[in-house]
Each structure stands twice: as structure tokens, then as C-alpha cells.
Image (tube, rainbow, N blue to C red; front, side, top):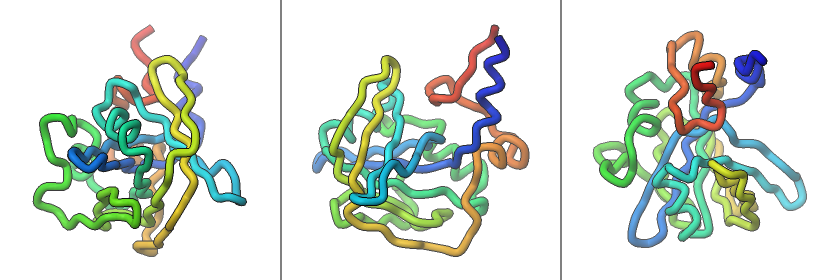
Length: 169
């Protein structure tokens, strides 16, 4: 089986973040999706090994920012290749908060959604969080970054905790 066929699925790059009142966390994901329009619901898929997964679980809400093509590998690395357990990903950059209190940065973001978790699905290594959108804001007119752009233009790699990671055969 050629599991790299899964790389042909079109998806974007997103920063999902949350604050449970004591801690804040964020990570890059490539699995954000609108589910319904009434009510507006989206899903995010987060690896259980990511510190952010626990913060979202405790908080019961999250912010979802669509990453723009203006983002460089330093930006992606800040949110994607470090853990919020040991590193404050929002330190030193402009940080705002959604109506639900979750942090996000408008830098390199097309839009941000504020979501209440209304359902979770355990899919083994990952948790699917279904969020009902409580607020949304367009932040720029920039082009959203696709996962294909991340791989072909930025030459980014897929980390082992990503839902699309395919290990060596």
C-alpha cells in the first residue's frame, strides 16, 4: 500500500489554541474542517500527545486560526515544532483573545474562530473536537496556506504527531 496517497488530500494549516484559565497552549494542525452550517460547527483533530489536546479538553473551548501563505518556517516552527508544556508560543508576539478567552495571534492569520466544544471523539492516537462557532473574524485578505503549499514551497516536513504523518514503510 502506498500510504503517501493520503498526501493528495487537500487540507490547510491551522493554529488551534486554548486557555483553561491556568495554562494556554497552541499547536499547528492540518485537520480543520467545517461540519455544519446551522449551527456552524467545525472539527479539529489533535494528537493526544500534544499538550494542547489536554488544555482544550480541560477548557471546553478553543480558537482556530487559518494560517496564511505569508507565514514562514519560523512561524510554523513556533507553533508546530515545540511543546506548549515547556515554551510559551505567544511570548513576544502580538496576542489577542477570543470572546471565549482563548489566545491567538493575528500575525499570519486569515481568520479566527472561537469555538465551544460540543462533542469529542476518541480515535485512538488523536481526539476529534467538534466545536460550535460562537464568534468569527476575518483578519486579513491573504491566501490561506494549504498543506501542499507547506510541503512544496516552504519545504516543510510532517512531524510524527501530525494526523497525516506516514512513517517509514
